[in-house]
View (spheres, rainbow, N blue to C red):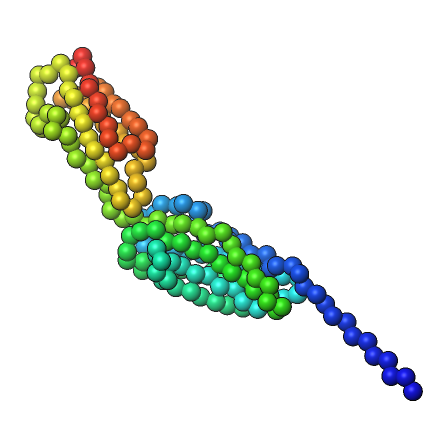
Length: 178
């Protein structure tokens, strides 16, 4: 008697697909809100067993949440500390293959930038000048400076001169023929 048996083995070499979806913020987002919304979808030909979302502030793990249900939506709320937060997500299938999203940075910055006038800037209340030199230094330790503007107004509050720069920490302007 010959006893024949056969068995089939399925080999899974495919990694799960995983993506951030709306309302997850794009990478390098600046916000003043003390919460970060993250939504992740994933799929796999054989079957998912785990989806995990992690949130770090610097090297400190703030939260790590796992689920087997899709989509995985998390509202990381009450984030009291301003700074750079990183989020990423991992999907793992039945075989053990896993895939990771890109890491996204979200900056929470609720503090106004600092502005200081240079010593060559005239004091407030200086009148009857043909020119006015204004020097200002700008700083923001969390999100940096994106745009600066110095404007000068006349006695009827009309703008008589203005100067702008992007990504500047110092702006010096000499308004003439006032």
